[in-house]
Image (cartoon, rainbow, N blue to C red):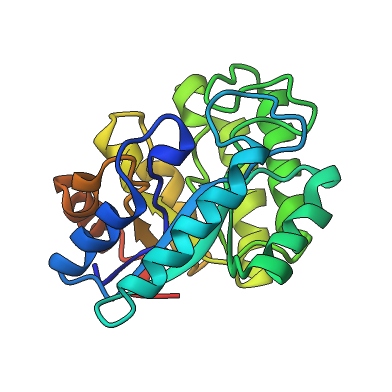
Length: 245
C-alpha cells in the first residue's frame, strides 16, 4: 500500500495519537499519501465519539501545521468521514470550500433519523433502509468513496437474500456513479465480519474500483497485518484495486 485514505487520531475521541505521529510514521514506512479523515463534527454535538464543533478550529490548525511540516516527506490530504445527513450537506460543502477538506468519505454508521446503529441491524427492512440512505448519499455527489459498505454484517450476521439485495443496490449505484468502495482493514483487524467474501463477490461482478484502507485508530494500524490481509483479500477475489485516488 502506498496511500492510506482512512485515518483517525485522538481527535475522534476513540483513537490515539497526534496527527504528527501518524504523518511521521506514514513517511517512515514509505507511504506517499496519507489522508487524515476524522469523523465530521455534527451540529449539536449529538454523540461522544467524534470531535466537538468547537474543537474543529484547533484540529484544523494542527492538521495544517502537519501538512506544512511534512510536505517534503509525504503528501497529507485533508478529509472527513461523514454520515449522509441531509441537514449537514451545506456544512460539508463549507468544509470543502472554506477549509480545503478535499476528501469526503461516506461512512453511514447511523441512520438519518439517528434511531438505528448500522453496526447492530437485525431486520431485513433495516437493511433496505441502510441501502436507500447510502445510495441517496452517493447520489449527492459529495463523497469520494464509500467506507466499509458491508458494515451491516456486524449485527445482521448472515448473508441471505435481503442482505444481497441491499448490497446489490449499493454496488450498482457505486458502479453507475464510478465511486470506489473500501476494503476496510479495520473490520479485519477487529474481527467484525467485514469485508465479507460473499458480499464482495458482487463488487467483482460490477467491476468496481476498490481501495484498501487501514481505518487507523492507532499509529501502528498504518502498517499492521490487517493491511496485507486486505490486499490478499482483493487479490483472491480478483477485485480491481486502486493504489491511490
